[in-house]
Image (cartoon, rainbow, N blue to C red):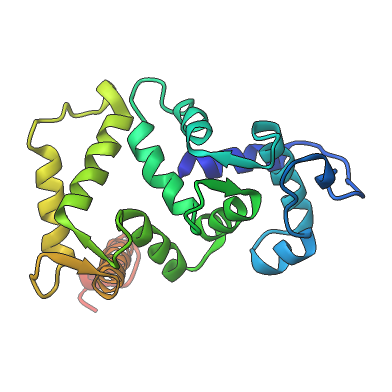
Length: 223
């Protein structure tokens, strides 16, 4: 996901001309919704959408991307690993209608959430990614598949070197924190609550560290 957002920023930094015909949308097989409508539905400006569309069209001239093409594009960011399995899960998260293809609208809607959505929106999207079978829950098998896919994607250059039981350890820690009622599955509510707790804890730690800086009023000065 970081790679996708990085690609957006590289597009955004390029010089481009204003396209009065909305980027020649009639030249592709799939015609996206009007940019005004997408601007209203996402957190991107019309000019940003134009840049994104040009990049999307360059990669996918037909106006849609299937899973094989998506995997080929995603694999470019991880030359030392096997990103195919994680790309499969990511593609399914982008393909919200489960049609087997991702349109420009699907792409920018997801990217808008990941880059500029609220914390709640980003967490809901991540939960959907982890919920592989889309039954509304995350079980240990699904989480194990996700973790293994991430390690496969990173390849042999992961540090420290992974032990055979490392993925299982990460899954166990995940469920210890997330599975509030210990029923073996993580619901959306449990996921949101746990992530917000972690976020609050990190903020509290940062505040405590700041207060202990020399010259700051805080616990170290006995306030």
